[in-house]
Length: 314
Image 1 (cartoon, rainbow, N blue to C red):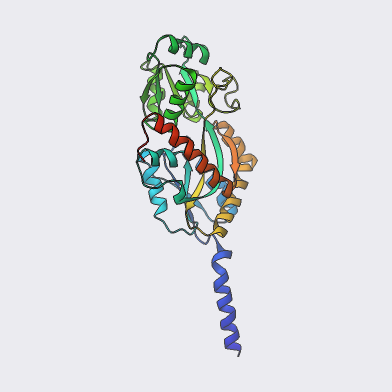
Image 2: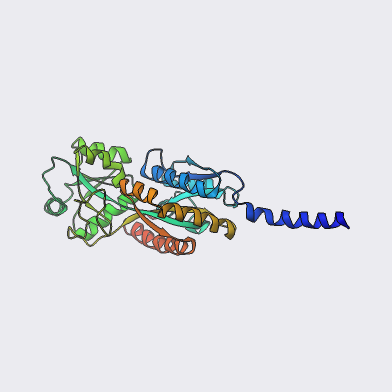
């Protein structure tokens, strides 16, 4: 009788162990872009803070290529047990609709949306335009003359540049670069302006090499208090790059809930808020279910914009 009772207790404990033990091993967070990028630095800070709560290290691995498609495809191929995460963004939609991958946002379950970043419109420090209105007036008077560098064809910065062109009623020449080249080419006088995430140009701003004429967010950034929003500059446009954590669809709800708690608490804490502000990012938290609905809405908007400019292949 004692043996049967002990065996029954062991079965109950074994059945309960997986849920109560999550996570029971180190987690891996895939970042879709290179080390030192805004995406990478924000992810590493959050991984450090969330790992303390989870009781397991969250290792960041950079898996770059095809606008994020390689990283998304890798994570989707991992077991849906909550240990494989992706630091996702609007790129889930741009990569899909550009035809870079067959996966769309429905292949993943949201854990939490955590940050948003506006795009900055910047020129060389000694450029003749003192604000965005003057640059856009010059572009309006000289169609195609203003060359605007972005992070690559079909990238989020490219979409913002096209939306700016549409809303401002100007004709720009879009020049695709990597994030470093878009800024260095401005400094070399080979293009007139760039659209980049603030973190990518903060060193040049601090060094007084470039001036930010406007940002594409709802409000001014703490790190760039003198840079007005595009709306303040007379352009009715607000677009931000969101970032969050997602897992493969089919991950247990208990694991998602545990991850949601750890990452949202990390993002809302003062240590990360201060770090994000210095990076030009805004803490913008959404829970798992809200994040799923938000991704669906954003996907529809990005699909329509990419269709308009001839970049949608899916």
